[in-house]
Length: 94
Image (tube, rainbow, N blue to C red; front, side, top):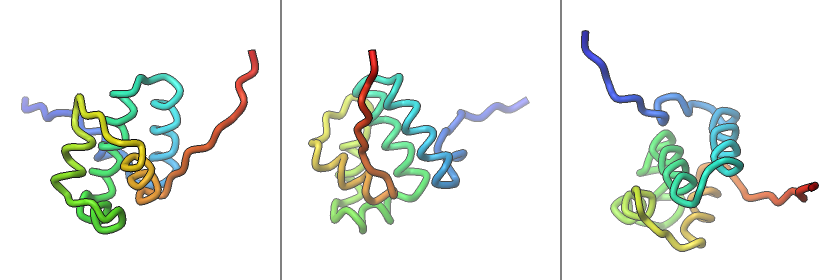
């Protein structure tokens, strides 16, 4: 039996799934997990397309969204817009 590595990007095939995945990671994850999740979404959509829409090069995107990377907030916003997302703040009730 042959096994293959699980790639979440293979399952992020519609906007609803992408939004649900990213919202879950935003609620439960840390900084690195959020950056990694944005990278998974960019891969699912296509790094070439994201590069074109953000004006960033593909190598720069891969580097910015790799494990351990600390991209600038502006880069994260550009990628989120390119994948059809946005940041929205909701009040937290205690």
